[in-house]
Image (cartoon, rainbow over all chains, first blue to last red; front, side, top):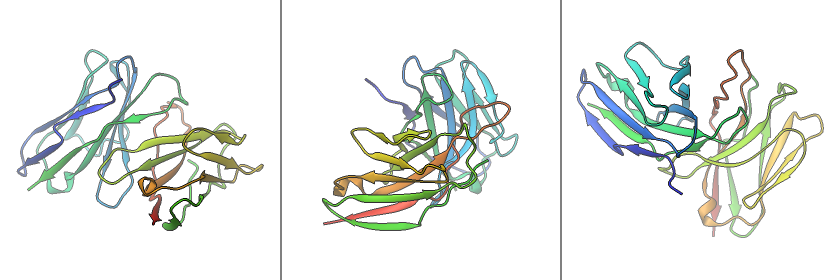
Length: 114
Length: 113
C-alpha cells in the first residue's frame, strides 16, 4: 500500500516568508509525528498528534512553528517568519496506534531559507 | 530519558555479517530498544525492536544482553544497499508517553565490495 507522502519534496523560500509543509500519513494511522533533521544530525522530534489533537508539542522550537491535523488524517506544519536557521529536512511519520507501534517515515521536505 | 551510545562509523565487507553495537546503560525496565536506519536522502526506516528477548525478522537480528544495558544489531549478509546511518533508540517514557523517538548521531555503516 501507499506509504507516508510529503509535499513539496523541496521548498526554497526567502527569510521572513511563511511556509506550509504537508504530510499524508498511511491510511488508518491515528498517530502522526513531525521531526526536523539538520545536516549531519539525527532527526529531532517536533510534535505528535493522536487523532486530531496535538498530544505533545514539546519539540516545537518557538511560536513561529505550528501544526494542525483537522480531520485526523493529513497534517500541515506551518512556519511563520522563516529564518535561515529553519533550513532543514522536515520529516513526517505515522503509526497505527499504541505506544510500541512502529513509526513509518515519509521521504521528507527539504526546506531552504535564503 | 535513557541515552544510547554508538560508534560513529563502521565498515563491513559485502556478504559478511555486520554487527552494530549500542550501549544503553540507563535503560528503564519498560523501555524498548528500537533500530532504524536512514539511507542517504530518504526518511528513516524501521528495522527491528525488542524488550529483552532476542528478536529476528527478515531484515536483521537483535541481540539484547541479559542486563539490557547493551544490544547488537546483526545484518547477516550485508549488501551495498545496506550502506546507511543506523540509529539505536530507546523509547522515551514520560507522563504523556507519546512514543516520540529520540535519535542520536547513529552509526554510519559503509558496506564495501
